[in-house]
Image (cartoon, rainbow, N blue to C red; front, top):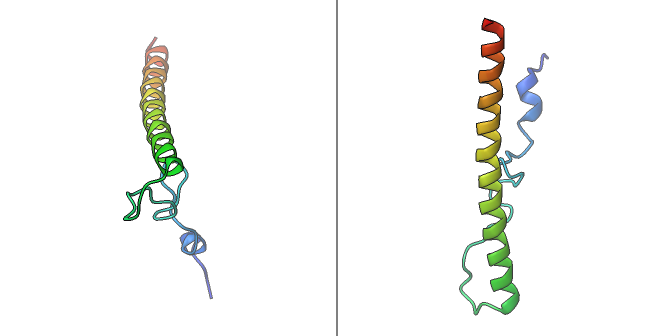
Length: 76
């Protein structure tokens, strides 16, 4: 029986670009009363998510700029 390379990864959960698996740590509002710790955790996660998004955008811009420089250098 032959196995394809992709078959090896079927059991591995899919991660988003922040390294979390889908549904692993949902940060939705709970139905119960929010404690101070819950509020702090939510605020911290929001800040971390915003920073990660900004970092991802910056990385994409820098990568695009590097590729443009490489293309320009090859043309010369």
